[in-house]
Length: 169
Image (cartoon, rainbow, N blue to C red; front, side):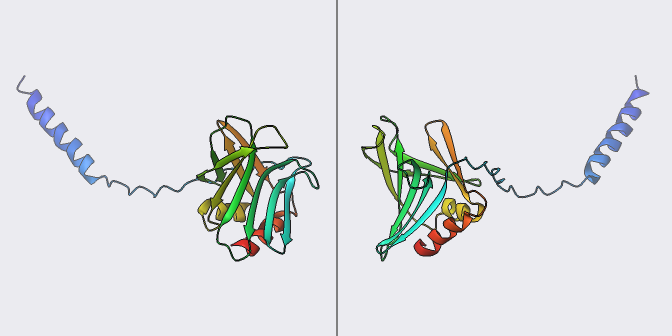
């Protein structure tokens, strides 16, 4: 048995020497991946409207009441107003996501004359990262419970998003 001890000792020294000579790599900083861009929905798009009192950006069917999400600002007033028509009983929050950024905006609920559900309204700062990312990538998604609805601009309508943020923030 004594003959094994020098062998074990030499092996242990070699293993320790090998471990000591390996440099531990510095981990790369974690970068939040951007969410893949959703596909635009046929018939739906972003529509910009500038008026005397401010501006609005709505995702829906042109010249109809079928609007999924709308953002408004009033001239001389800081911030945005967000509106989302949801089913009765939905949590009073407008949960938005864009390109890896996300935020939940506490909302007030009022009965909707259009859907029979409720309209959620919330205020937000246009400089919030979720809106800045939306401005860069041209899409934003809304979460209602565990259901995600993505609102992507069709080619050429990204200008509506940019015009809105130029007017509002």
